[in-house]
Length: 306
Image 1 (cartoon, rainbow, N blue to C red):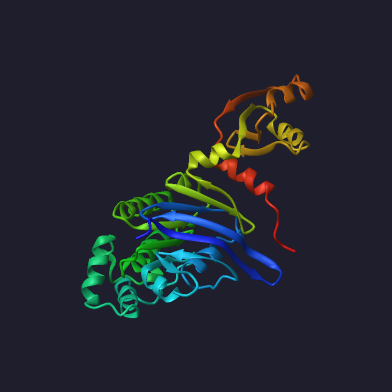
Image 2: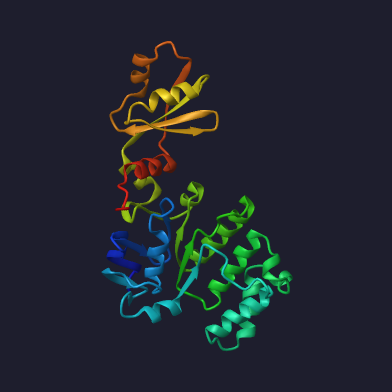
């Protein structure tokens, strides 16, 4: 058995003249949590749907769980759990009824025992009779994950699973994901949260359908080759306006300070000393973070709208 759960090359999907996913290649090892990152409209959802057999690529090849993504889509679907961005279960049914429906759809033998075990496993037993439509965002998320796990998949594809839930629910969710990965499950999860990205074993970042970076968090940061500074003090609005006149600087507000990044070799203190020598700003070099890198990648990406 290959050590790769996902191994695709040249994956492309077009809608008219626009390549929503453009020559994308990605590899995910078995038992790994891979963070799939990128701005809205970057092609993450389309990629996930091609990987699990819901969309046929216009070009490209490869395998998911050892099955050809073109010829063996049905076999892939039976071994994958896919959690969509929006809650997709029946809100007028209870938690237990929803899970029973999913188990019946998969034709699972002894489905009632499977549903009971899943309720206990994900801490849903006490709420099993509650209607799904009355659940909070965090509990809906847990129910959706339970539905994905009923048939004991080998791969979880999670499309922004924690959007709109509170920090505690996000933390609990990630504890479950790491426990599942430790037991051998492979996870590809799209997210906009940088703290969640840092919880992943490896990352893949796409923008406008193209893969721009891949590797561990440390590798992605190193590949970017950025220098980053923190600018603090009074009059930061004026500082931001001054910096934005020069395209080399990427400026982002972080609380009561500014983070300023640029490609290696740039010297922010010298640049400020020349242009605003009397300004009351304090500048110190800081470690480049993932958010700094992803802002830079997004700014440098080419729009695919033609």
